[in-house]
Image 1 (cartoon, helix red, strand yellow):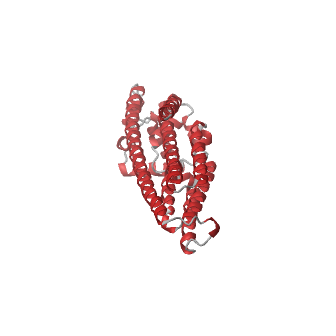
Image 2 (cartoon, rainbow, N blue to C red):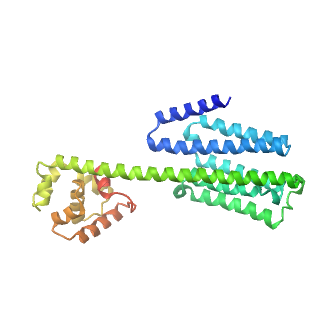
Image 3 (tube, rainbow, N blue to C red):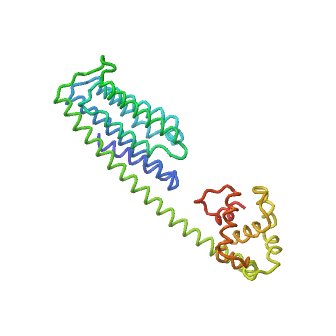
Length: 314
């Protein structure tokens, strides 16, 4: 049974790797691994409730939730990545933790599961796009926790299980193991993300060098030499090479002045800041200031490569 399940999961990962580019595959892999982590936690809850707490009903509920989460591996990523569905899922999980925490009592320390959920939120949501969702969920978890502490677990007294000290000890041990497990998974994901960022940066530098070399070859017939020699015919020849370049760039950013358009033309040739300073007979600082103004007029973020943007967009 376990062997078949392992083979099933491996086939899912292989298929997804073939269907996606690397970045999309990594994102999908993060979702898949954390989904499996959640399934594993739910299965552990089933074992805990069956063999240590003798709570068959709760075990059945956790088993159903685990089976449902396992089935989501087969869903299209368009559905799985939907932020609103994820928001509802975490609302449900937060409610389950709150219920279990109240039912088992303070000594069982079920509230530690809020930490596991908060760790998962960091990987399921993008802070730049989903910060309000993240703040809402974390705020709700804090509210649940404080409500339990302030009321001394007196709310919803009808669902209290009145567990024995031994049963509460079982839950505490399990919760400690759950937190450690989720922390190690989180550390692995952080490491993997760092490796992706490093790889992306290296690939970007390689692409930048390749574009630079290619452009130098393309413009070796005169444009580069005209620019570097500060020849007055540079703009004329540039327009003949790129007849609609200035027209297109002014459509996007009509408030560019002539000196900034000249900088944009030199950026199109992928010249460095130092080379542009030489071509325009100005200082490197002056060129950096102009590039900064151009970046602001295009509303580009500070981490965007202005050269690549000019080359690719126009």
